[in-house]
Structures are given as C-alpha cells and as structure tokens.
Image 1 (cartoon, rainbow, N blue to C red):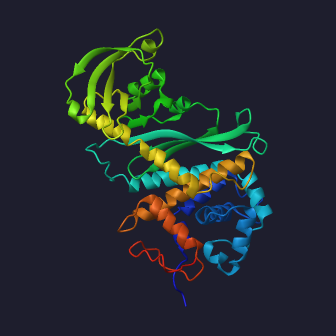
Image 2: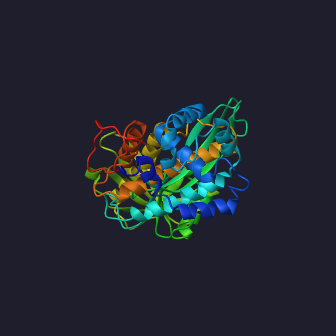
Image 3: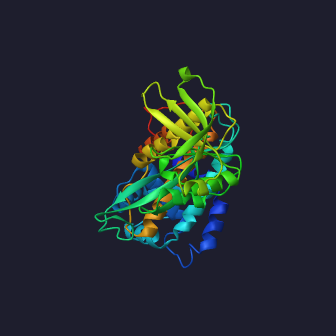
Length: 380
C-alpha cells in the first residue's frame, strides 16, 4: 500500500530539476557518463550531508543497506565508493555552484517579507568569511601558512531569512577586502561588515554606486571631526559625528565625509566606533545594524558542525569545492521547504529535524512540522 513519499524525496522535490538538467547540459556534466549521473551524484552527496556520513565507505555501506529504497530516493543502484570518488573529482564544480545560486535566488524571494527587527525596508547584507583548515600534505593546492592549508568561504548573507546571496570559495590567502570587488551593485542595500573589510578605496566605490555600508573603525583611524549631532548618552550613543579622513592616501581614496558613531554596549561594557556613509538614520539604528552582523557568524558557527564542510570525501580542489557547494544547496533546500510550512522553525532547528528523521530506520511519513514526533521513527 502506498504510504507517501520518503522524507528525502520530499526534500529533493523542492529542487528545480529542469533547471538542474540545463545546468548539467551547459557544462557537459553527463557527457559519456554511464554509471553515476550528476543527478544521482547530487542526491547521494545531499543524503551524505543530511545524514552526516563520515566517509565514502560510510556512504557506500549506508546506501547498500537500504538497496530496496534507493529507487524512491532517485538512485538507480548502490553506489561504489570508487565511482563516487571519481565523480567528485571529475564533475565540474561549477554545476553545483550554479545550482546553489539558483536555489539561493529562489529562497530569497520566499523570505523577502521577513522582519528585520527594525523599521527598515532596505535589503541588509552581512559580509564575512570563515576559514576551513586543511592538511597541507593532502591538500597541497590550497596553501595557507608554511605548515597548513585552508580554503575560505566568503559569504554575503541576506539577513531576511539568513539566506546566502553570494558565496565565493578561495584559498586561505585571499584577503577579505578583495571580495568587495566581486559584489554585484545593489543601490540602496546595506552592507554590514567587520574591520577585515575596511578599505577606503573600495568603500568609496560602494558609496558612489548608491550602496550603504556599516563597518567598524580601526584603532589607528586618522580623522578629524567636522560636525557633531546631539546624542542621548543614556542610550549608549556617546557621539555621532561627521568626520573627514586625514593622512596622505586615505583622503584621496575617500574624499567625502564619513559618519562616525561611538557606542558603548551596556551589557558587555565595550565601546565600538562605527563608520558609515548613511547620514539620515538614527544612530541607534546604525548600531542595531552592526549588531545584526552576528547572524553571519552564527551561520558559520552552525553550518560547520552540522554539514560536511570540515572533513571531505576527496582531496582534489574540484572534490572539495563541489562538496561545499552541495552543502550550501542542502541548507538552502531546507530553507525553501521550511518557507512552505504554515508554522516555521528556525533554519538550524529545521535542518536538525530533517537530519534526525533521515537517520531513523522505519516507515515513510508526511513531512510536516505541525507535529514534531521525535519519539516516532521514520524512514529516509
């Protein structure tokens, strides 16, 4: 008797497969492929992400143990680890990068009406990067320091829904400020970033294209006050000033005035000096925008232990990059699925819930967040 689709199949249904096949055709991903198509490779790797498989052998054994259910997962036959390793090494990683970007665009539309916690209609992005440490002897193509390798995952996170809108994967040596050159101009949007992205020449480019930025000043900032706006120190705002940069190069790189806000956090006691080119919003709103930057830190803090982007199934650059992009696709797929539910959960809770259910070994069930039957067991 038919009892409904498996949970894994329900999650995969949210992926636009026609677009997926067009992307595969664009890069010739299935050219002369007989055993494991790009579609099956994506499903297998997505399953490994959601169930947190430890290795290629772990994936092979887990799928072989459920051979009667592979058809319902979209996989024709058990996958040998050598076949999967070869696919990860040779299939163009740009296929999965384009799939991830397609899903990110789809998810951002679904979360466009999410509230930011402040009265602001503009799009707000948080820009940051995380370093994924690697072994230099096994990953010699990603040198970082003299004794270690690493890749960086530069992420522009849309704070409405915590959905990545831009991701760039580089070696560990790429400076964070260089990522500002890769961003597509979006006039009126806010870009919130830490001091690692402070480069006045690039910030002036953001300013000239109609974008707003909020960042933290370095301790050696050389500038003088032009005008001070009245502030209420009881709110934590110590000063709200218009400043001009001093020195030789910085005034040439950023010739216009900047807004400098000094804020003392009552909870931590720390004093922050913020710089922005937005001159009309209240100072407290600018401080709240910078505080919201921690969402991208939480995104990295959650995605590293919950998805497989710290340990990899292959050692080649293509295998590592493909695995990271598939992990991002899985995260966004769960976000898309969650947006269709009448009662939404936080994305980290929703992904944990899917992962928990997929690891259980019993009957298929309807994918519904209305009941959270962790005591029940369901099949993948």
